[in-house]
Structures are given as C-alpha cells and as structure tokens.
Image (cartoon, rainbow, N blue to C red; front, side, top):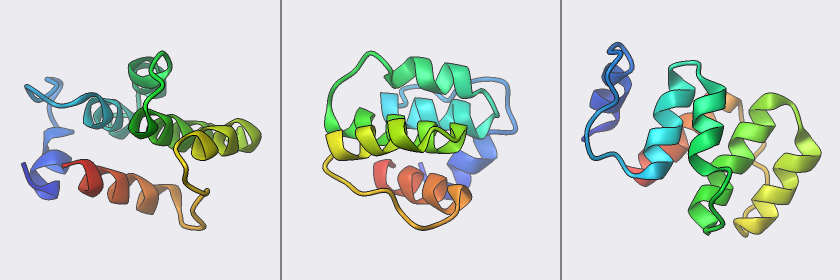
Length: 94
C-alpha cells in the first residue's frame, strides 16, 4: 500500500484489511476517531506502539504524557505540525 492509497482509504468507512496495529491506529486517527486510535495502542508496550501513543497524546494536547511515550519509544517530540508527524508516521510504517 502506498501513502496515497492509505490516505484514500480514509474516504471509506471500512478499515483496510491486514493493517498492522500502528497503521490501524493512524487510520482511525486520520478518520478523526482519537479514542479508537488510542484504544489500539494504549495497552501495548513495544517502541512502535509507544511512538504512536506519544503522537496521539501530543495531538490531545497532553505534552507531559506525550513526552513520556516519546521517551519510551526512544524518540524525542518532533518540532513539526501534527499533520506532518502523522504523514511521517504513516510513511514510516507502510
């Protein structure tokens, strides 16, 4: 799947088949469903899920919590827009 195909899939109400958890969370977030996106990763403790979790808390405005999850992912909070971060995360995990 390409980034364009992933982005186009947001026009559908149907989650694309066989997406890994990080992309499933980002798909829900792209659809405007923060709660479902968070639900996908909030119980996981791997670095990839921690990074998505960090992004979601940054989007929520909870910077302290976001920074905790960025550290858990061994990353630092990026100084880019949320849209840019979302795009970079999608491309990274495609």
